[in-house]
Image (cartoon, rainbow, N blue to C red; front, side, top):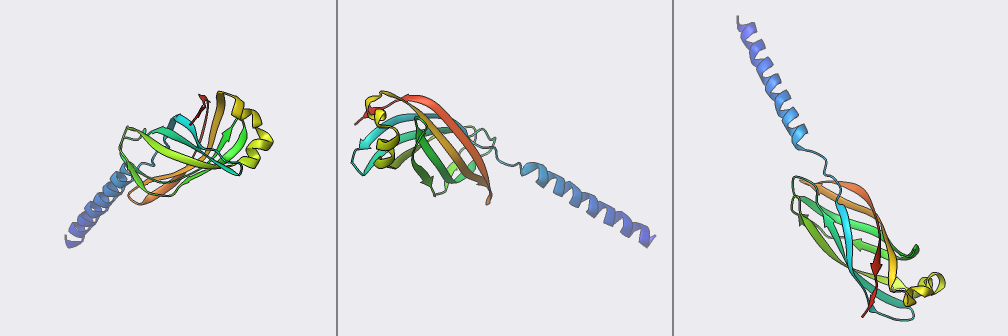
Length: 159
């Protein structure tokens, strides 16, 4: 009788443990990557012969049903398929669930590459902006790298 009672208690503990493991496993859903919606307000803010600065607002949408933390953005920016510069954001910020958010960005550009590959950029009022890279997003201290790619035509405003 004692053995049977112990066996029932062990089965209950095993079942409860299995149930808790299942609940934790289903609740810890891997975060989806952000939807990169748009690049807005592309402006040349500083012009120089060696370096120039371009600012832009990168617009994203968090499709997750839960808030996530954005820990890092690392991407290459191209204009008219010519490498423009690298953008790195290495700070942690919280993004609410199902929300759109904007990252103000500034990229320092080596003008030698622009003069070599895209001098007509200065005389064009519309450019093809391409952004390729990855983000590190997560929840509860667990982060994953999520690649992204964005491409669209934009009007370029000087100053």
